Length: 126
Image (cartoon, rainbow, N blue to C red; front, side, top):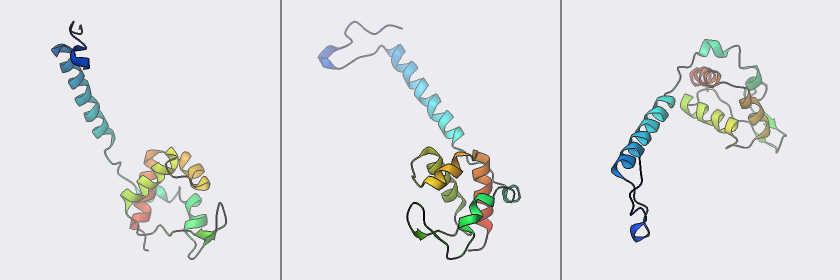
């Protein structure tokens, strides 16, 4: 595939129809792959029972206040929306959210672990 000889006519890059079509096809394929990868995993609340130990030390104590990195009340997770919990854990794992303890915990969780934990806490009483 070749770029047309007038590739920069008027200072604007121009592509041949073949390149434009290939680029469009690639973008469509990437979008479809992204959408397929974004499908939610089905969480298993029963499987999470073996994974909650790291959570319960802080989030399972009513009225608990943490002292690291700052003193603040730790949120209770029971009854929270599953999708919110998964997004929060993903944000800790990626570094988008910065709490050091949560980043460390989330770093060791797989996507399935996150879905399982979210299913468990979404079904738990507030």
